[in-house]
Image (cartoon, rainbow, N blue to C red; front, side, top):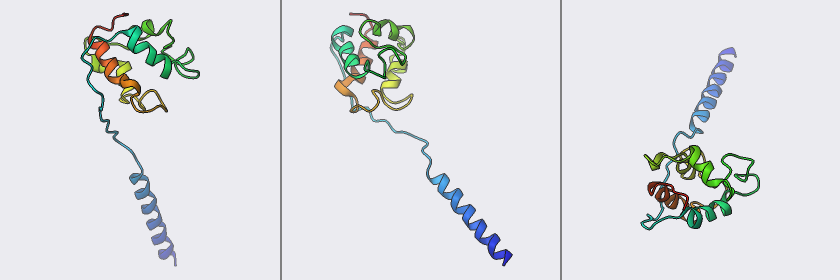
Length: 131
């Protein structure tokens, strides 16, 4: 009887371990479906309107969560520590937008609204000026 109980216990322990291993996620594959931007990107005309509509909303980046992407502070907030013009694809803001830091931003929105990923990358490549 005790051998039967030990056998059942071992089978159950093995089943639990097998189940736990099969339910893990180790890799997220991101597909860049952005259309390349070849024209000049303006922060005030192209980037800020998208940030205002999708990011600087209540409970997100409107002052409660860094960076503050409200129209009055967005440029300085991004330039302070989220932009790397020497290596644009490694800029923090781009990594967050594309989901390489966490879930793709803006959280809960359609994937890549208004082609923000390509616009942001092009703007950074063009020197991330406050134009």
